[in-house]
Length: 572
Ligand code: ARG
Image (tube, rainbow, N blue to C red; front, side, top):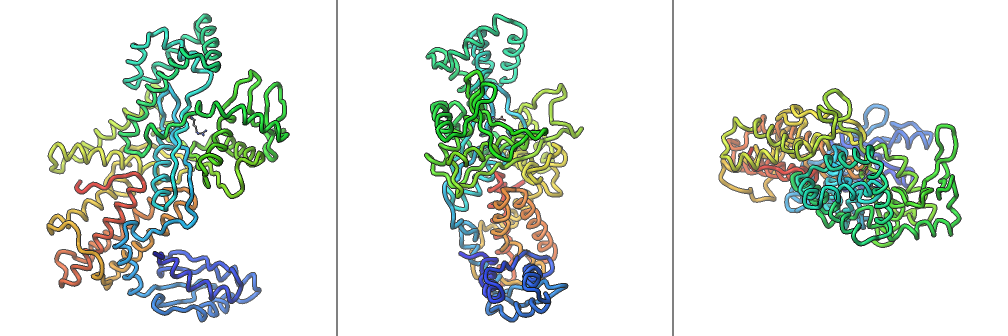
């Protein structure tokens, strides 16, 4: 199925091609008309001609039959486009009978690997991991809708020198006691105790160092103890994921350690390609274009001077694996902005080594920090990491309070409060431009007014309540829409733009684009609902049409919220 925008572009392209083959019409949505064509001015400039004249010529060359009601040249050479109401209706009818609501599959869909969440074993997940999890979840869901084969990779930090001290601490505590502490999710407590001992006790330091050596050497007993730490942590992460309602499962955990068997080959192959250089005993690659403040070339350290492999080596091995073994055509890394240079360098080295061909897209989907009310990094009062499970429970408590005035039975209240809390947290995260920091503010995210999760969930529930009053579950779809009132038309036009919103979200991997679309949809719906009475419509045909607009709005909200990983409650 073609989107409205695609259908329109098919009409515009020949008119532009006639003036300059391949010229881009630069078609955008518009508040003044349905669309605006912005490509005339740059085209006229290239042709050295008067833009209004060029615009007139373009207009004369467009086949409008059955699709375009009006073309108007405006200002210095914009063209405003109005779609015929019949074409808009046909588009909505097609949308209503399509499970994907008219969102076409990506013709270039392939295997897409998404690296996200990636907390560290025996450490509390922090709000940065929450952001990664929520953004990654939304990207995975959306890629799936577009027809990609999505491979989720939870690149858990499960290897490295701290494991010496962690394993020794596990031995000191005794397995049963250690597991008891970890299984209630006290990861930070465990880590901090180990650290304190390490800093204070030389004997413990020696034992820890020796333990790292046996871990790396693959000593069976050491590996067994290490696996306990990993398993307990993963179990805890899983509990957070299931509270949050994200797609990640244990099967998606492919931690850093999984790449250990591939690390030797990374070094050998880089050496064979002549890319490795020695720098103070460390094996490094110096990708061109990366320098420090003094202008000296920056190394990507592949093997440290102590012979150990680091974070970069693991990421290089992971790129290789994702491209060569998984067949990825796209690799996304949903990781905080401070790691931007790391990923740029890893991608550069992987390209130099031929592990990342030009036609494979590798993107660091970076995000900003979560701030507390004081605009500093979000921390507990005592300055520690906020425990995610506590955070989620607090959200549920607050949502329960906010919903207390509505008369729900206890079971419904519990269910809805959970949906609202997660919706609030996720929407607050996803609706700010991901590159920016945002302030974690319960009152704002849980408000039932403004661009919030609960507001959109409420918009959905309100529409569903119309149908409950009517005592029908769904109106029969197709064939009954008529657009007479301007508010009906405005809503219809916005509904038909869903595929464009998703496309623009995926162009920049910014769920905020979809958030804005959904908020605007709810606003358009309110405008419609205030000026067009539905249940008391003047006649049966109008009523059927309006009910269908309600239905389509609810489905669009549900699909859109679903792509954000947010549930759409039936009642609120
Ligand atoms: N574990 C890392 C952290 O907590 C994030 C890993 C991101 N993914 C990657 N492939 N490097 O910061």
